Image 1 (tube, helix red, strand yellow):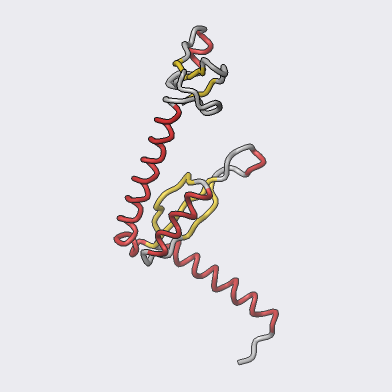
Image 2 (image 1 turned 180 degrees about the vertical axis):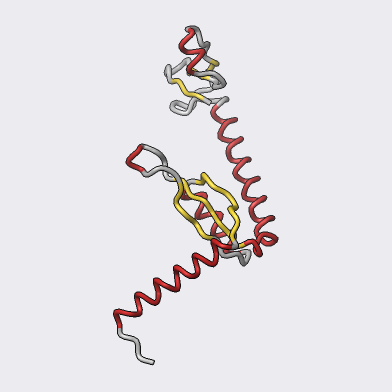
Amino acid sequence: MYIKPGKTLILKAASRFLNYFSLTMSSILLTEYLDESESKDLAEKLRAAGVTPMVKRHGLPRFFGAEINFKIIIDQTDMEKAGPVFRQFQDDQNKARDDRKQLQTTQCPWCSSTNICKRDKTSIWEKFRFYGVDSWRCKECGGGWYL
């Protein structure tokens, strides 16, 4: 059977749609709210483990000022293979976040000084605005940051 060159694009698009549709019918959401580098890293690790992930953009469009988030969807039958890879990825992400937080509570992010202190929230507005957030100030450069 001879297919004209213009029709091959239609057939490729149709096969992609059918692959996507069949994956979404038996798929499971593995994780969401990842940034681009995290999603690429996890997708590569899943592919190395023999799992076919689908990485999709997720969240508000960029012109609303929101960051672009990604979610990873896998087939339900691949959950056994993806479980250990995902748990290792979560552990690595948690360790990296804890290291960043530890670094930010021991030195200034701008001048790397260790002469820092926790800033007091004196006004009612600051207490309301920064409820549950630690505010830090550097005594050397005067910089402030929040954790």
